[in-house]
Image 1 (cartoon, rainbow, N blue to C red):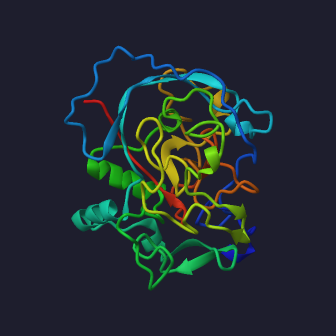
Image 2: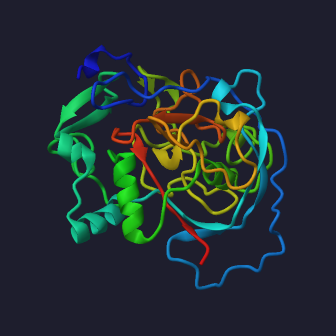
Length: 317
């Protein structure tokens, strides 16, 4: 269990049980996604104004999933048309305050708490570190305190599923997540368009500078940011880009796109790792560009790190 031997700056962990490494990185490329995002269910009645608290109604439809860029990683290919049903999605990543209510009600113990440690990227030392006592309450280790409006960190896929079940929700499928992240835009690189910083404005919490040694903090945050600190996408969803990686329901399959069903794909039937989407505050132009809407990553279900969180969805009643 030697975290120190792992490559510096590799932003995600794989199996906690024997530390094969931190998260695999998808291609460092700017990707344009081809295809339309026209809603197939455009005639569906609008939801009641008594919308679910803290959730956004996502009207189902068809879209082109994946990346057509020549430099995109093989796991983003091929671009394929997918249809998803309508669903509700959390407006923001699940916060510390929300997770606290879950723990208070259930006395749930996270995987990081059971193991007694988690992985933290030290910005000062420019490397990942194994930190005893790091967990969702203590995101930077003993003595630190998680802020209520921050996205909850150090949560595994197992933890995210437990929270979702308690709320009566579930984790989004990978197709649902990407459809929602696009915010109604077709074939765009980012959730707001094709330009990373339109008009010089930074649109999300990601690493400005040269990762891992220099972070300018030009977006106003060197580390994590409170949820909804940046503009929402076209569907009114915050932080679909950056801040923390978000767990999805699916098993990860590098070649799954080549055989994906066209209707409401659920991912491979089995696997060893679960998918993650959206990138984090550690993604940068020089290293990890997974703040693109097509970017993908993956980790084992018991993985927890300082740059992993989640949000939930709910089926239409």
